[in-house]
Image 1 (cartoon, rainbow, N blue to C red):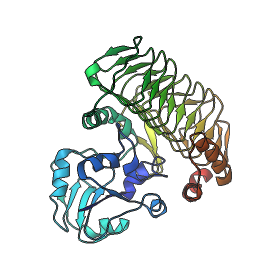
Image 2 (cartoon, rainbow, N blue to C red; image 1 turned 120 degrees about the horizontal axis):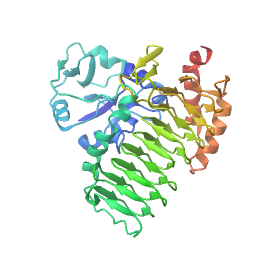
Image 3 (cartoon, rainbow, N blue to C red; image 1 turned 135 degrees about the vertical axis):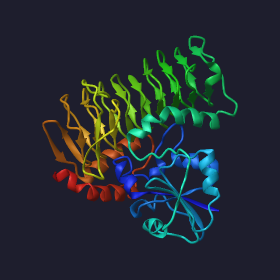
Length: 393
């Protein structure tokens, strides 16, 4: 059977700016991306995404195929229900199409058009259809992914100056370096992937994942429900947040209830507010409606798109959404919605050209021996076009 994870366009837009440069299923939550979770349950899966992303995330669906909503988190029961679909059958949860077994290859827009009748699943499912659902459910997914991934042989932490609590809940990969740290896994697992490094003075509370090639700088304070994706450098204080990968927060400063995409850099003493002084629900920009939407939670920090940067002492208000390829500076609070391809501060914004953004990205990626190529340039050009109306508003 062929399986393809499709982008529900309504959900894709609600997850912007995180989905400008990736399918929904490439969002990291817990240890794995959503697509990696599906691969565990189903074997090979491919993407069924928007046209401008298709060259980077191709679909291998051919002929009969089961199309699965890329925002759906797989669990044993819903996987079994999806595998029980007969050709032409579909499953919904409320207004959301979860899966459709097509008799033939179907276009992205054609999936919804072909589904005239879908049965309602009785299962409780998790659909990542808003940015805040990523950090809200990160602890849950860290635990679930840890159960799947920690079955192999764990290395030992041999440093005699490191204090360990709940050692049975810690998985250590190959070539991991830990010095003079405190690791508390009594209330949640800690996953240290191959070639990760924890510098002296770091304090970690699970659930927590430090993925391959990533580093915690000296004195880092990790307060739990945190994922540090591959090849990141993180310091300071972090709580209930996800770094997708290849991003830096190397210095002091607080990041809480936040999602940081790839190739971002938070300057020294950048801070995020994750709660309002009046304890009311935090609102976040919704690209679908073009207005701020309540998160129905008192906790929501920063949502930062790929290739964005903040200078030293930048302060982000609760519920700030930052697009891709931005450069933010000045210690004053910038506004809560910052579109893509801009540079500036609370005092004013200027458009950042694709050429300038590409130069910055090329230098940043080269620091990790990754080439900025024609495909990256093409994506920048497309998103610059897609986001133009927000820069004019």
